[in-house]
Image 1 (tube, one colour):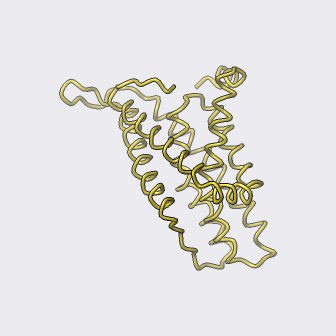
Image 2 (spheres, one colour):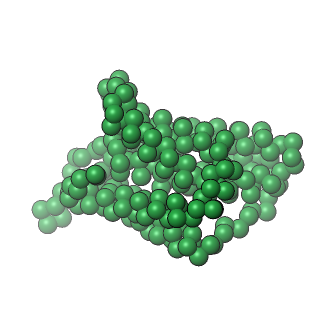
Length: 215
């Protein structure tokens, strides 16, 4: 992976547009995550909530970058593992198929729940360390969709990592306003979720070596 070359790609028009789009998607996709984390923090005393939030999200950010790096590296392995009826299958194909299927299925469930106004229940827990661990685990689970979405849209790791960082900063400082905005204009999230489904389908077509223009 040539980090210098990918960093230079960030300075291009396409790189800047990709960064903006991915950062906005991180914010939209992360609203549910912030709401879930907020429910966890309400189980702690007021004076411990800020420290738990900063500690948990800082660790979660590190885990996101590690997960992103690992998945990006795997997605670039095109060596044939086995062949089915003259169709060569690589780690990249398997990863894209799993990721695309995950995006489509998971996002469809979330879209249905969003349309039906379903809410995620809170968690009954009040131990500080346990809450921090739950924040990290929850963020890892919620981050799969954003990571696979990023890989489906762009191959530049630097842009993806920066978008993840900006998205998390936006979530921390704008979570209340973003949540209220999306709650008021629910069609915004509906459009975003439909967009994610399209990205999932794009990943699945890549798994079968069918190239479709992202535009």
